[in-house]
Length: 356
Image 1 (cartoon, one colour):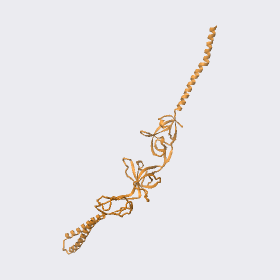
Image 2: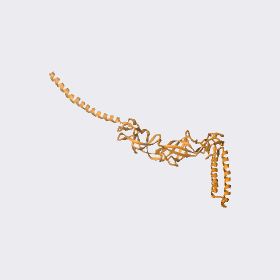
Image 3: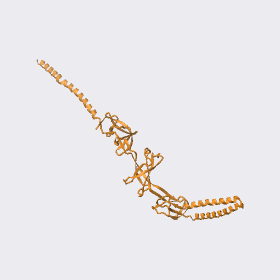
Image 4: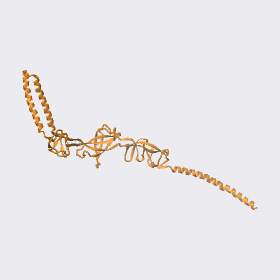
């Protein structure tokens, strides 16, 4: 009897286990698989890198070039002696103004004046002889050959007189233009040889400004273009006008030399001074400008990342002008592209991203 009761109890336990225990386990397994799938989806979504996006569009950009320049005088010359001789007069005051044609230096000319006087005496005698020979020639009292010798002698003396007069002119050194006298290099009483520097004259009103720009801007600057400049430590902008462009680009630096001119009535701009030059070029109304932090330098140039179908895509770009916060894109991006501006260092092509 006990055996029957024991067997019946075991059967009841098995039935109850079938009903309550095993189905629940299967449900638990099913629920576990379903929960795992959901967890995996959430994990994949959580793995996307959050990024900031900048919508690419068109902007108007003021095209400006900044360059370093040097102030040059309008005219500058170092006066030198053309002949040898003792300096008998030096009519200059260092740093003072001078007018065109003013006498600066005088070289001893006594020997040249004596030579000129001798030639003039010979000229007078030759002309008197020629006059008498003309009368004799008319009455056929002398031959034509003798007369030709006398006539030629007069022409030779005229040429000698011109040579001596030219040498006398070189004994006086005069200012070729109005300007200011520099520091003298010699004193009165010194003996000068040909090529000896005496003094420098500088004309600094107006002044010239020389500066260089990259060769890619050679087609953007023309003679007559307006530029502005300021002195080092002076924030005020002064106007100048381009008067000449070097016809050749510097092969080593790939730059073009440009010369501008500006008035200087008060003498504020000193030749040789450093200036900062700004040239305004034509504005670009359809420029693609992006934040500079979006640019990634690479071996072959520059690249950016854009969002496409939820993933980061790599795009090579060509850059142009740069401002303090943005840089121009000449090729590679189009209007409407979603440009990634943050988390760039963690990105690779086809990386899943999530816009913040």
